[in-house]
Length: 250
Image (cartoon, rainbow, N blue to C red; front, top):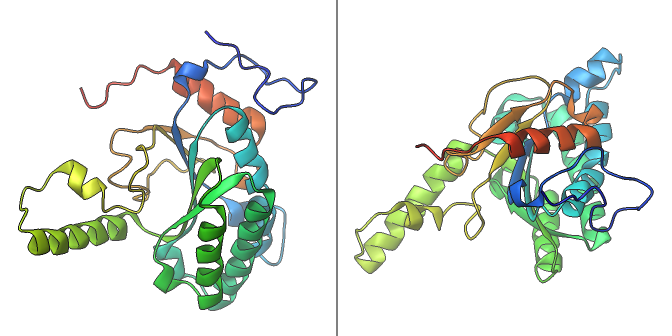
């Protein structure tokens, strides 16, 4: 086992509790940032968006923990397409502003390569433009890949990929439909499939997150709400993942 108790870039005086085997860490980690509103209600906030604000403020820190541990791709589900369809415009406007603030902070660190996965057409023009700028500004960084799933739905991702693949097949005459060809049209094209998905708040469902990509992923359900998610929670998820024997459907 390779001890990474002193993680890359970490303060030598702040050691990770317990050893993590670098060879058994996920290459691609997905996180469902769940429980923000329940966290706010439990603390009697009048505006539940404060749960999102406080929770999303920690995103750069959590990504830095992942980077320090050598995880090279992280996908964060921040806002689903169903959220956009079903929540009030007042709540959504607050969420969009919070998302904008997070994107600016991520770009400013120069530590993360940002990419939107989700339906930009569902988002306000200002947020869509900011996300495009963030992608362009960070595209050439030698940095951890961070996918921001905003306006994202797993079914929509898959349907869009199928539609794009049909268009390509009609244009090229290549009717040999393979899993590899389909994956090349997904929002995460060119990236490894997620190895581990963490969902906070104690909810034990996938909600269609990375529906195709996570078919063989391991899942870890964490009881704490996202604003309370800690470095020790991340390490416990990683240790649990490292102890599992992955079967990849066998």
